[in-house]
Image (tube, rainbow, N blue to C red; front, side):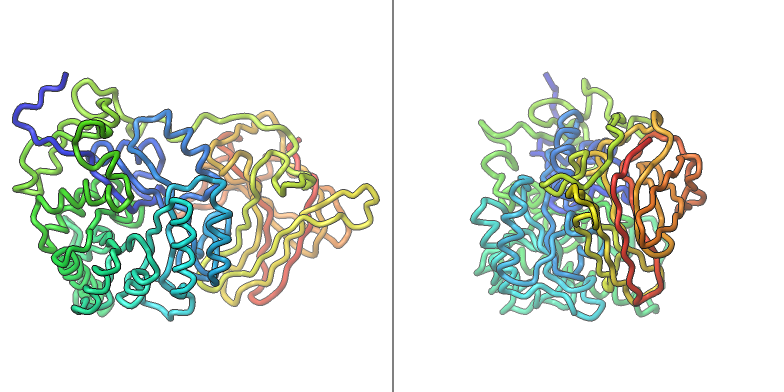
Length: 527
């Protein structure tokens, strides 16, 4: 029994826009989950993961104290926002209605919980709009998603694109519109079409509490303040018009920590003009309704999921009281507060235990296009708006009467510095569970190509590389682990090789801008 006299009783809070990324804070899955629970957030949308990782991540989360996590499948345009840092195994690229429908159908095998469509062109309306998703394509994406029971949340930060999303049948914007203040016609259109808005004010706040004052005479700084003022205004005017306003943060992005940012978002909604009570409703019942989860959670009622938060204070009068979390329950089980088991701290395991894998990594013979380990290969070209154009495919091994196959990587390098093309072979599905390779001595493979290339072994703690050369004829190469060199990180020299926590083996090449590169690989094994 929990004694709750004098405490505020709330439904568990939602955060409809997060990124569980290793560049965020906290950076790893158990610690991220704990940060949300400590802040009273019991339902979260994760917009960051490759579909191939959903199954192992769901299995991992089932072993942890965690909020309910819904995975969003990512869909963007070629070169568009969200398609800048991964290949199509992470973010599917579309630019026609037919491609949109095919993308949704292709994602169904992974059982996504929702779709995130990147409708804006490059980066928040601050660069040329070369890659926005046209309204017809976005409409087809929404229609196909809805036909398969999936909600669509869309990335846009501009009024024009926001109105196009509403006309396309999108369920909610995943950001506030910030380029200008909404006029009455825009508000009326969004209201009439039934689209919700998740402002994510926390990620855009230009002056964070406790930070040094910023120089508002700097044009870029002044622009960030002006856009934030527009975001505050638009959140309030949409709310007053009856447009559903949900709570999300973009947590995992710079200076937007998990958990704490959700509570900050409530304070910013109050700053925008909502009352504390209205902000609390936005974070609970309205967010649940946006996700069509309102029959299951979002309010406290008989038959609903027992996701509950106890607060020491009255947050409906003073929204700052929301930080005074006393207890949190998920599915009726106490996860924070008296009687709860300890949540993961900084010293707790931040990864799944390492597993072992067979020596044969990939011989490129499987008919389903998966590796010999059953994983999905990942192309790893450079990132950005102008990306190296890369194609990888399994092809017959020339001159082999046995029908043997190999992997061909072919690329046209982008016109910029530090161009790169490569392919990573995950050792486990989605590269979620690490591997202990200390039972092996190195990597052996057969290659042909022209010039210098790089073998890279990727792990949770770092990356280790060694160069090699290839000629137009097949050559067998052995690379001992002892010859791998640690890649430097932003924080300094990379870690020493341990052989544990390994996730991928990668092959790639750098060339001059505009050049072409090719490489064939076969029979990749540990030895």
